[in-house]
Image (tube, rainbow, N blue to C red; front, top):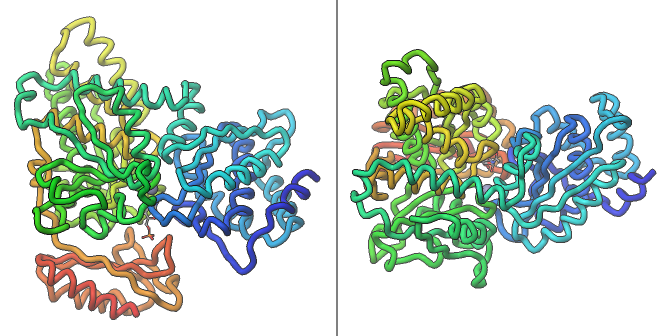
Length: 545
Ligand code: 16G
Ligand code: ZN
């Protein structure tokens, strides 16, 4: 068959076992040709099964430039259904073309995947700026088109969230080019700017520029295009990759958040400037400012604080809607926030003090996203800067009906403005997946709305000192956790030992979990002082060894 002959060009590397994991397949790019080819097949099958457009993104995000990776966007624009992950693993690891064909035939039968009389498979392909992306793109196309009548549509170099956005838009019957993406982001941004209360515009002097570290990846380049469509926001992009810097090397959101130092290209000249950093495929965003002229230390404004800013703004708009006499009880929108155990304890306290429902899930976007989707407005963020705000269809419908009704009556009322703001947020913020570009625009417009500087925002609460360590162990799967990774259930006795350590520290908190992306166990600790956090992390890592 066609499949048998084409797959013989993509034999898997020997002795390498790949796993779809939390973020798709990732490895040194030279090992991935057969994997990407096979994920192309999977994408086409997924498209047939769902009778929808599927996305396939080639990226290794914040990992080093010689790595690459591949992941699937489901019809909603979200992550691949977890039910298909075991098939992805089996597919990637099938030793020979014959095994591969047999595996596919069995799966097609089991899943009842329609071939004849059905709409042919369509797969949107995107990739980041990695040099290995070109050859892997060919493997992806070959994989997709080895399935009968399947079509691969190459969208070129994109951020990961752009591709997810396009898949979602296409499946909703909307226009889904890059031009449409930029159009939607910039018009909803301008709409929010126009709705800023007049008396606030003189506060704060926020009209200074924002300086963005593009991680030498795709995000900085796209941001430069986007910036031209905005007015009232001046952005300087550094580390755009156009000046010889290397992707993710001493730059980017992952580096800045983990190391808490300035990225390359930033320094004493930037003291007092509002800075932001994207990761290599622009699905993570953190803010920071350079602490002092003499050191490379930064004040980090992480995903938890972005979440807090968003939550404050949304809560305020909901309050305006609910206070209005005639609006009462018309729609009690449920607002929920979702974090992981890595969220700084001070952020969780702060959010609870605001009266918000805070939910914890295990690490990984698919878990946070799924939980957030249970609310009318669900805000999720990982501390590392990946997150977004999800709006329920029914609440969007209500907002649309309400703004229609109001625009004929009480023109320009506070209620109408609040409803219009929420609608604009739902269009600005990526509904498919965390998106650094749309997140950045929302942060900027909220700061302007509040009349806040970066410092004022950063003062919402003060982070507890924390420390992360990784421990190499013989078998990391021996560590099994429960309750959103906050307790160890196996090996027996480990949690009790951790508890005993925690008890020695003021505001102590610590947990361990096996990494989903590296062969290590991760240790997290928090305490009232940095010395305390360091020593708690150290003693817990000794327990894990
Ligand atoms: C992946 C996840 C990210 C998570 C990280 C944790 C997605 C798309 N990405 O990058 O959400 O924070 O893994 O890595 O789910 P770890 O398991 O090695 O700590
Ligand atoms: Zn990323």
